[in-house]
Image (cartoon, one colour):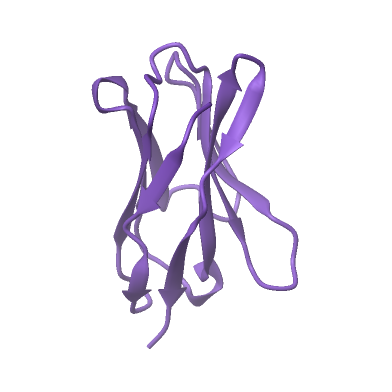
Length: 116
């Protein structure tokens, strides 16, 4: 089993930046897929960004050029650097990793609020 703890959320003004972190309780060296998703109340959870063990990344069109995902296998951590934040980026952000013995795991989420 893998436990994930997200941090770094908070309140930021439009145009500001935040960096989210997700620390895994197990080594992520052999975990291929790591990603960030977000959910706005009343809407479905959506993909924000993913990164593979080999470093290949994928981004939602809405965040391309503004967000950057990275991973540090030595710290069992995946990051999401968010720049030029917009009000519509307000959401709960979730970390997702896997497969770990065939299972994908979710964190409990961290709230990002973009407001003036």
